[in-house]
Image (cartoon, rainbow, N blue to C red):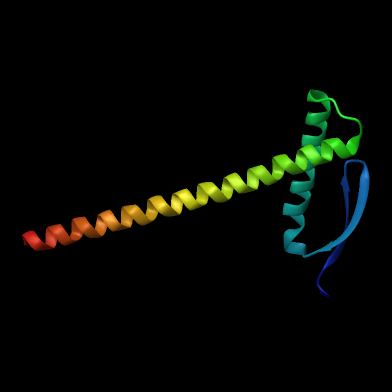
Amino acid sequence: MNNLIPTNLVIGDRTYRVKIHPKDEEVVRKTVKTINDKIVEYKTQFAGKDLQDYIAMVLVWFATEQNAAISNQVNLDNVSSRLQTLERMIDDALEDKE
């Protein structure tokens, strides 16, 4: 915990003081920027009562994006596994002909 750096993050006009690893700072700041950009985008596209409504919309969007990325990775892993199986089958068939 000693190597954590204190950082102020502003999300939806509210400041949060958090401690993060220096190596994670750039990713965290980019994520916060994406979140704030989405809040602004949703404010212009949708009606909402207050900032909490927009933050909730961004949370749903962000979670959906993460789940889609995980699903895509699972699909890629499945395709890769199938290709490896086909490659083994072809190699075995070629060895049998020799």
